[in-house]
Length: 176
Image (cartoon, rainbow, N blue to C red; front, side, top):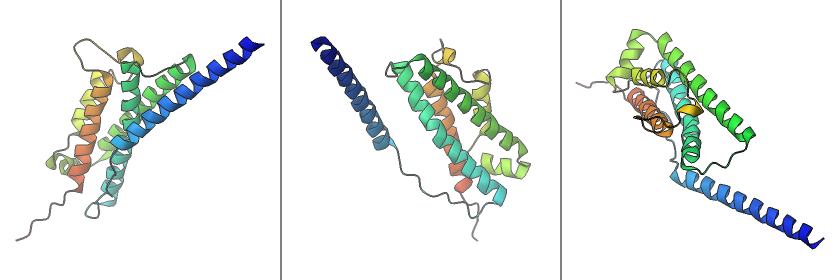
């Protein structure tokens, strides 16, 4: 009977250890996150306002994927088979979100695409990154010889999305 209580106490201790580790990781993530300033899009057409908001939403949603991928690569991701399935679903969702965003880019007119490019944004770099992934983020490609880890490759996409956000928030008014 005594062994039963010792076993239960050990399992409870392991559970508390996992909870405190998860809490520390969450605290670290929150400390590292930045407060997002409201988008300055009054000068844009309604279509470009939506596109700018979609760009920000995509960037913010991918931040979680970058963090989770980094944890798996670093060995901090304690996963069961169900967790791995969830991880694969997360990668599939990230792929779908990026592809959907690229489809929106394709619907933009030349003037709108020029507006992005003139400000220093380059949706083509995001398309190229996805092409280099084989049009899908997959667990088997987390680390590939001759390429940075997937979390860094996704972080490069985040940086480009941020550049597009910044580009679209610039006003192009010239005062004479």
